[in-house]
Image: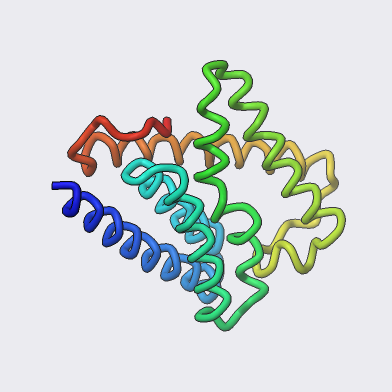
Length: 177
């Protein structure tokens, strides 16, 4: 029985790794839908954490970063995935271990603002890769991006619930949302 669980976890991790790389590849070649494909690529980390734990989530993130750098020709397009979308499932899991909902929001928002701020102020053209930001003032971009992040986190939570209710058979797994 234990052997079949381990086999499932390894196979599931490999499938999630393949889907992650495919989504990042699509983000690098399909104009206008980059953020959508990056967001989809981040969901597989959550599924792996639910099925196999946080260590497996870190392993998926690391393996996907390495394989994306090897397989995807547009290296600049990998930057949003490597620094934000790829690791977000792990950050969300860590933040939501807190029982305080306000603390969860603060941790996730601080992570987002640190990545967004670093990318915007220091490495705008490199960090955002093929994501084009409008030429609005910071007073519009920062709150707008924060609202989009909150929407992203909410949709991410809904997708985790959908996965738990419709796909995952054993509900005794790790709580991610």
